[in-house]
Image 1 (cartoon, helix red, strand yellow):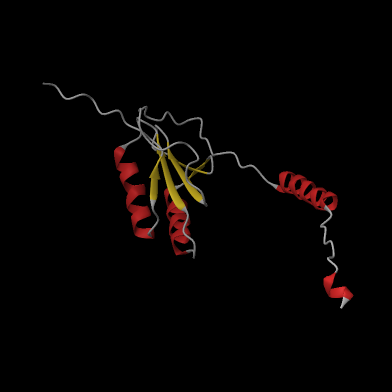
Image 2 (cartoon, helix red, strand yellow):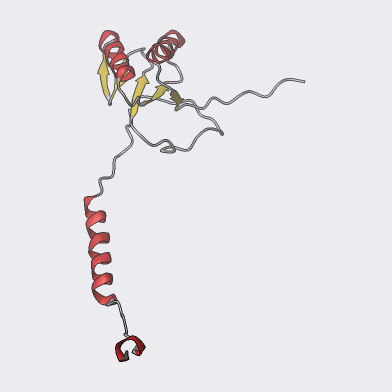
Length: 140
């Protein structure tokens, strides 16, 4: 009966727990990889004051740039239309579809931009445009 009346002290040692938390924190800081956003320096994007912030979309991305001369770039390197078409269609067949990002030069041929939009639509890939046009003010 004496054992039931005595109150036992159950203390959790905090020092080892804090040690483990700091070790986990350091491990995750060292194990994390930071990805640079793809940039094609030959692209002169249209300027604007509105649009999504850079890097606001998570997940895999398929970034396609259209240069001033009408050439396509995927992953920073020039790619032919047939190869680009094949890669987009393959990405559209994947279980988890990437987010398509279109980055045309402001002087890129509009027909090339429309072709890529059509290809994204055929593959069922959502498109995030990384260009922001300024809308001119209406004349009174």
